[in-house]
Image 1: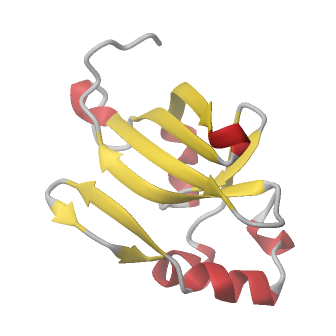
Image 2: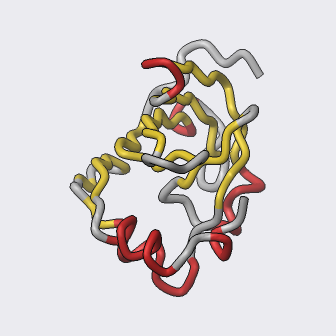
Length: 122
């Protein structure tokens, strides 16, 4: 899945949505409109799922999935990530909650927070 695959109508609907984010004491809610502008983001494949995260696409190479928990009959994903873009220790942890978009096969982040890696399985 690629961002370019989304119809203009779907992009407009996503741009209206918001997500909660706390990274380095910068709190949200944040708008997806900013992240879609200039195609800053791209879908990331986590297991069998395509997810859209508020992470710039050039940083995807620094992302490791530690765990992906599927809930609500496949409608919600809780994902524990390690993002080594700026730190490789316990401060590299992120927790993401993604919800499946109605009538689509992909997921959009609704929560993106720091998470201290206290048990790194990688």
